[in-house]
Length: 472
Image 1: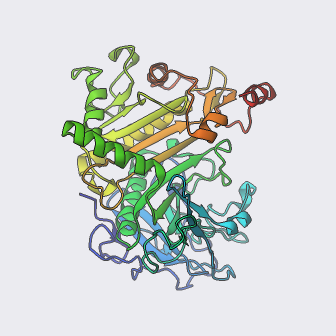
Image 2: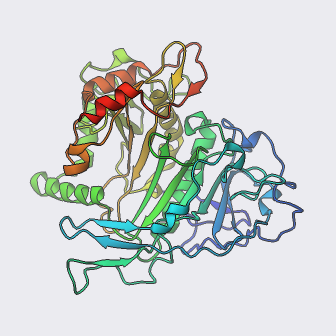
Image 3: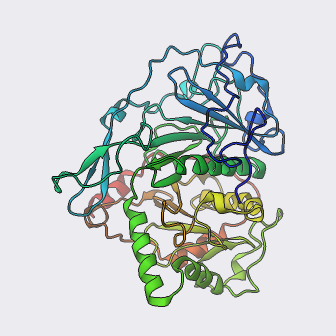
């Protein structure tokens, strides 16, 4: 069961009571502070690797100057500084988008032209996701925070779900369209601008998990929402326009194409075998290393494994008592890992406490392995990646499984994987790295080097690489 996330007033949040609307009395729009940031108590809680006072997760719900919702998540009792008002002179946002259905494939495409004006690569001292300070107000009015979630100012989908009819074909089957109703939220993982998710400590990573769970519970309960999708894009190579460590949550009014394909494959597998596709998939990967080799995670050895623990051709990267990470048999990307809870659940809300307790060790270990893939003795190159959390859409909770699909577009330290003619044109992936080799490599980098240099992120490939890829 999902953990209870308690509002700062002492009332249960979305996970603790049905019908929580996110308008708790903990609203901090009182304007009692002299300036956004001047009354906040800055401290160690703002640094990656710390998460303030340990304890139950609490949330403080407030509003930004233009009416968008902002939620602070804290471990333990939140500081009174969470009640800082947003003093920016912002006009109410009125985004307009629509969804159009491709008549040839049935996929829905979101058209959101207003996003062309969104913030693009601001300098670090103008980051809108950093805490506010005197003379520089941001999307986070408080002078410090642990985890913060707010409605995107430039959303692809906006408007109250359920206020329009469910998307359906119109009288003209070639031009089906509907309003882009849904919700897009930004999840700020830490106040530390220069950190990444992999830099967090386990307690802070657990706080992010609690926030993901709370948002999933609340958004999936809204009428018209078909699927809640949590994800993180990291690195300019991926297309990230804000360097601050953050992710996003989309409440989608339709089932996206990859999920639709999974629904179809799971149904076909059930009809052919009488079993669940995802149960068998995880069991088969775990069986490849033998039951005696799958060690429990621990603080000293997060995955409990070393390269010699697994057969050379195993695709398992790391395994714990409750989670298993493996490179998929038909991996699309040079380095791609899927992470499943060993017990199938439809979404974050279905995880039990044992699974939640082990998650931070497993997930942080996995992200840190990605960061050690492309470095050498003198430098560490942070891997650009997409961390995509797949959750079962409404009506398919009995067959689909919560899981992470984590992948990087980097295939070597100085070469990127481009989606060229086959991938972009006909959705046929060509992978340059054998999945079994990728799994061995990810196992090999399981232990941090004795001395690591300052990580760096490369923005582009070398001219030679660019020319090479252009030939594809």
